[in-house]
Image (tube, rainbow, N blue to C red; front, side, top):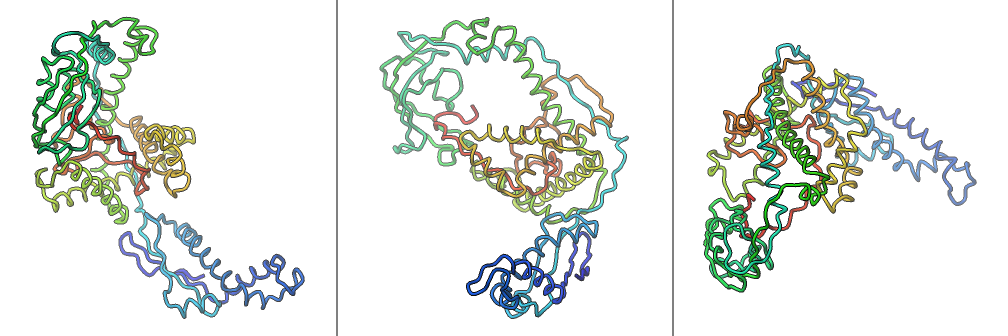
Length: 497
């Protein structure tokens, strides 16, 4: 086999591979000899089929299998021998000339193919001595715990049917039918819908007009959907709702005691407070973690500047761009509405893609050199978390990860990245700073909420993309199946519940 490098431009490589026809024929003969004792052909005793006859009958199919085996296995061997890692799956080009292909299958011509790929750049790791971060810490007060427990108690509050008119805080049970321009619209109708007046669950003006109704009343109310309402066909539109009041109930007394805790499946109110405090501390801890991680990534971004494989950058950009356009379509907005242009947004998100890929490579190199590994138990926990996120789709999810090449890497990458961040935190200077929750949650200079949760909040096109937090260390892995859309929320309800 002859291996010749025909292109070495930046990270791009092109390798020409030639396997002489005599080598191909030698391998063909070995396989024919092996098949001689296995095939059964009428008119010949086992093991007595002439090789020439076997070659006439099976030679081309065996050679085709050999060619496929070569292009499947040799590229990896070649890269390993060259000490290179390909950023993406190498591209393989073979002859498209039918006559030439026929000669190769008959071992009458050399088998040639070209291997094209981009190499992962060599990264010389630098000392982390100069990396320092400020870890903002919030002390959870007793008042905050009690406030959260009151909200929990409020959600568990019972109601008792009353006579008379509905007042603020009462629960109204009703049927309603919404119309725009006299036509009913999707999601605008419900039966036995329950609404606590003053809860702010429905669009502005809806609940106010129900104050004073009583059981048996029929009423039509008129409201205007907010201009930024998620459903573009309703945004800014005036709508009428035909209401039939079924029941009016007054709230029972709000009591925070062991009985409340028992209703929630917890042994005592003291234990409930412990759980709530732990949840609040965990929420703040997640925000703190993201802000610390952001500081680390920003400093690594300054420390490491090198050319990234364009194939990875292109794939990352396409993922980002697809999400941005989906967000815009769902919100009914344009780039202009977000204070930018499509051209400028493309440039910003291209920079973000480059940053993500570069930092992903850096974190990967740091983790590899430090011996960071993701255990099977950690992978199983990540898979279980995926299954919980997609109720009713467990089989689909399992089949996806079992049958999709590289899918497991999408589970491994975020775990690996967090473990690398932990490794860095054990080496760098970390200074704790006590702050208020308002300071912790404050927006940064780019207007991006520092505590933002990537899984829920998407970056607006106008955000300074190059400053956004880098994504997981895995590059270009295929995403897991998308979560099925939840049933449409009643159109009368405010989407920001």
